[in-house]
Image (tube, rainbow over all chains, first blue to last red):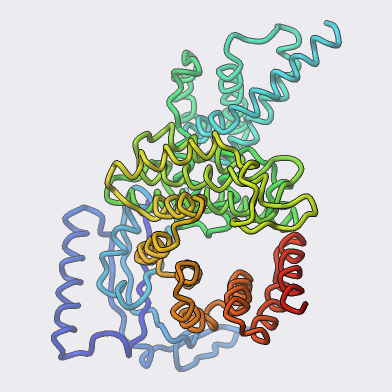
Length: 116
Length: 406
């Protein structure tokens, strides 16, 4: 089964760029990504730039409405994701717990829809 | 076919369904991987059984018969369904051979896997309780709704949502491995304990008693996983508490405090079994929260209770479960052990987190009145009576309050 691991965090509680904690976090992500690849579970994943770079859009009555900012204004933002392929939810939760941001943010685990 | 015979068959079916419903459902879910389909197929098989057994007589193995027919019914349904359904039917057919020649004692016991699935932390706490009662306890949806003061459609929706999530989110039908064992077992035992507590605070009720249901589930776990100290501890806790049920509420319908209970009314064999189980568990030298709770229950039922020991046990329990409710119990034990000042200081710290928790106000009322702080005690009694979960508790507290006024 495929799962998306959506990584949410509040920027102010995350390690700041340039600090040793930031280096540790990045090393943690590198180790985690390598582990996924080695286990044959990796199907993709990226980190996202901050919400100050986000643009939201909707089409209403044939007209495009473009807005500055993320879909919802919340304290914790979507900061990145992985897509993994594992046998069941327990396996997905085990990987989710290894994500460095899980220690200060929240990881949401969602099964990927299968059309067959 | 005569009428008495047919009712004998109906009674036999009822007995099988009452005693083995959980086992049959677990076996079906293991093969079909679909809670809803398994339940419906078993229901249909039971209906067929009634007419078939009346014609052909009771089969040698009624459980095996029900399992076989339920599987066939499920497969028929799947065949009539979508392409995806047919694919699943093929899978089910594969495991069907396994069931065909399997006598009930040979059927692998899937109930352990099922209870871990029902109590999976990816389901919300109330759904875990409801699903466990529905699938392993065999309570009906209206019975569960009544026990938890929910409207029947609400409870029905809760159950279907939980079953749908198990399928859609890929919650596995499996006993967890050693690295997850302790946490997941605690989740299962917590569900059993919540069921017991619901029965305990509802008081004796017509129909299925939730306390008995919880004890049944704990015994099932102890049978399926022998020599597991936390399971033994949980079963001991339930037995030690349940042994006092006849003395809990007086003839006048008022709750009776533990110290004032008539010990002759306690169920001595049940208490003895609880104490023996606790000894067995503690002898395995792997302490855990349920063993500590059982030890507390055991100390409380000594005459007189060993309060310093109980206070120490609560401090130990707080390390496992750092909740304000455990601190409240710790405070009460400290007071009973003689240190009223320390107890009241601890209670003051809990005023905010436990503002809506009835037992907090009841404990404050009791301790403040013993400390002759009458005005504060009266206020606390009023809060506790307003929040009382049952008329028996309200009556008990009113009596205590009135004693202060006289």
